[in-house]
Image (cartoon, rainbow, N blue to C red):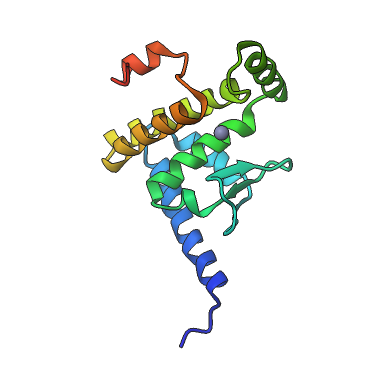
Length: 164
Ligand SMILES: [Zn+2]
């Protein structure tokens, strides 16, 4: 019989997955600096958190079970959240008022650059020996479209064969 509680074993599974996710980022060409920036952050697992992840006011990254399907999926989420940590606060304000003005989701303008980073990373990882990252990139784009609408970035979409 195991002496570990369910919570402890979930925590250990998360730590193992986190190490693999960081390996995926580190071994993707041009993402070494991103992996180093992520290593400086506190990253913690929150079993009841319903979103994939969020950043906290103290600059930590909180991760929920939805982001933990695979190392590649978690890696993409960490790249996304690390980008948010570097966004100036004014960006959020700007996104909010732009959304009101244009009757769009108020976080659309804040979220697209982070999604774009995540998708670019996943496509790079797919070329680097993590083929499952290609379908993950498409799923990430579809979830953006579902929550926020069509990204206003036709050039990026066309460049990666995601045009409509
Ligand atoms: Zn985000």
